[in-house]
Length: 342
Image (cartoon, rainbow, N blue to C red; front, side, top):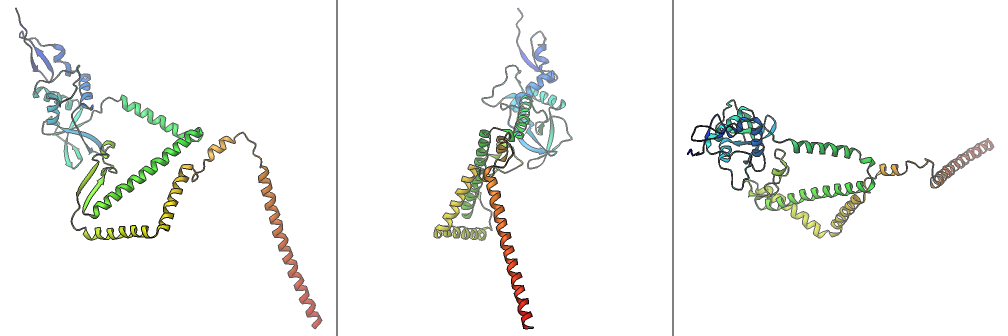
C-alpha cells in the first residue's frame, strides 16, 4: 500500500505539494506562476484585510508603501482576525513568501524605494526584494469602484451645471445645505481657535483635529488624531501675556458695554436669518423661468410710476422757467431805472 504524505515545497517561487512518489500537484505548483493569480493576491493585499501601509510622496505623487519584513510576516502569519481568501493557497514558510515578493517586484506590482525624509520617498536603484527595504505599491487594485466613482463624479458635474433649470424645491434644498455647511465650517474653525487660545495662554498647545488642514494627508488621515496636547516651546511667555491681556480686555468690554455687544450679536443673527431666507442673493433664473410665457409689457403700476416721474419732471421744468422769467423781469426793471436816471 502506497501512503501519500503531503509535504510543502517551493519551486521557483510557487506553492506546491509533493507526495512520496516525487510527483507534485501541478495546479498548486504553478498557481502563483499565473499573473492573474498574482493580481488576486495583490487585490487581497491592497484591501482592508491586507497589511497596514503608510503614505508618502514619491515623484510628486502620493504613494503607499510598507517594509519588506512586514509584508513577509503578513504572508506567513496574517494578523489575528484576517480572513484569508479560500481560493488563495497559504504560505508555509518565509522562503515561499519571499519568492512571491520577488515575483511581485519582477512583474512591477511594487518597486523598491528609499527614504529621503519624513514622508518623502525616491525610487531605489536596487530592484531585488529584501526584507530590510521599503517597497511602494505600483498596483492600484481593482478599478471597478474607481470607475464607478469617476462616472458618478462626471454625472454629478453635469447635474450641477444644469442648476438654472432645477425645480425650485431642489434649489432651496441646496441653498439650505450650502448655508448650513458654511456656518458649520465657520463655527468649527472658530471653536478650534478659541480652544487653542485658552490652553496656549496656560503654556500648552492643544488642537482639536490637528491635521484637519494638512494638504499632504488623505481624507481619513486628516481626522486623526482627534486631539493633540503638548507643552508649548519656551520663550513665548510675553506673547501669551499680551494675548491674554487683549482677550480678557475684550471680554471686559463685552460685559460692560452690553448694548453695543448685544447689537453686534443681533446683527449676526439677522445676517444668518437673511442667509437662510435667501435675501442676500436673489434667484432671478427661477423668476425668469416662471415668466417665460408672459408678454413683456409694462404693468399698470409701472405705467403709473412713469407718469408720476414725468409729472415731477414737468414740475421741475416749470419752476425753472418761472425763475428765468423772474430774473428777466428784474433785469428789465433795472434797465428802466437806469434810463429814468439818465
